[in-house]
Image: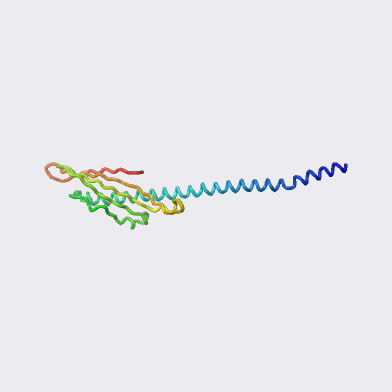
Length: 170
């Protein structure tokens, strides 16, 4: 019987460190899972920040397009005879939701015998934060284009303005 006891002792002493190895292995696996989860969360936060900045940039471009449209076809119903000086930078930063954003508005025109066509291109830009490689600043850009056709109408000679909006790089 003593021989059996000595054999059991030898087996137990050989297995003494195996629990420690298993605990270390499990801790390494959990650390890797935690690092992957942190990376996915950070990426999701960056994507959300860029989407918010992109939406704000769209509304900055839309505001610039509306400003340019008003310069060509004001609410009085009369149409302008020529484009405003391009590029123009309307003060949209005073709008609380667009603070930090800007709009660059350009106008071009073409004239035929009875119709004058204007094209207003507005590019909105909003900072998205330091999301780039090496935490470099990223800016979201969106563009809106408005086409305005002013046609002289019949006997009255009044101009009738037709507006067409479209979104570039949605």
